[in-house]
Length: 253
Image 1 (spheres, rainbow, N blue to C red):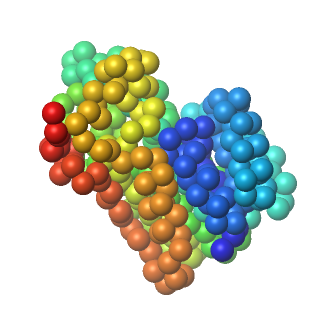
Image 2 (tube, one colour):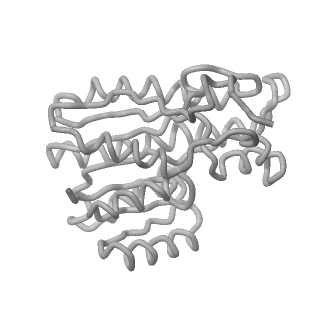
């Protein structure tokens, strides 16, 4: 295969696994994230193992000006982006709406929604010039069903669900595919971030069953890019076998 894949939030979890998966299959990759040390380490690891080129861009998707600067500064060869994986996102806390933290709300909205918009706006423009492309938005089961305490996080993922459908309409005439991958429970740093570094509380989220891994989701992300040009996966929901929906799990004590 080969080509260029840009993955946001590549410093851990699903994003990191996607970067590795595309590299394994001959893609040069652009990795972005806030933690420069992790980006540098991943760049070295991928280049040494897979003999492809890696471009590391250290910025926060919440900052429109930095997103614009990073993409405007790309050399011509790196602007031929075939795949954009909008992975950067997070959840903060599980407070009911009447106890919610305004700063947490802003962070989730700015990252999960506005960051995805900034990246999609600027990369889709490059894809239109190139005449093709594939944008993959990492949504969530939280964008299909709400759960207690999920309020604003769920709202951002519902927005990703709606945006994916709208982007597909806008970009179809430009031969650009748009896909949403909506995972259930994935054991990454997600819960630890949500619970402010409380690793014990985070671990309990995954006790009693086998959750998805970042690698499992990356397999699905890559799969949708392997189909013939006339085939598009619009929406793919991927769950652990032990998870029926957003709140029902079969756990073994």
